[in-house]
Image (spheres, one colour):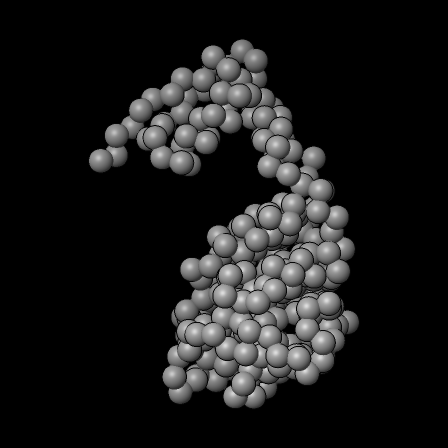
Length: 255
């Protein structure tokens, strides 16, 4: 049984899958769901923490991708990354402004506050090399938030609302270009969300076998459309591991 889960709200950013990979590398189970997943559905997942992914959109645009504002009142720790930081700011009363030039480069940031997110990573006033990708920037933090780091041009690079456990960074801790980014994610998982990190891929496979057997009764058979790609091949192996010869795979040549 999976008791610890991180939920990643996907706003369409290119690094969403990489964020999930980094979380799982710390032996924490996570799932990716659409950014507009209803609050009722989020509650059913019972996540111990929520991560908002990056995106190339703008929060102030009419077509801006936004989650429900009430998400931040659930009492669940949240980490906004890149666009996720701007979503938090926009929905909670801050101001986001279009940058004169879009950035996608190495950027040194200066840590101003010793928050749990940066604990053991960068002491106050210490600079940290990060990978920044932004077309907009935070002009004003929402009420109750403090700026915890700034970039070289003095633009906010991180903010925090400690009471509600809301954290946000403008840079990408999940990419290799960010120094000690994996430790930043680990701090969110263990110091902020209080997780233990006892999930493994083996335990996931065991749980999936149990779920599959519960859905396919002993007197039933199953059919799997198999293209030979990673997704369908893994699905076929999992189902075969669970019900054996009662599975029939049909090759689908999709060209």
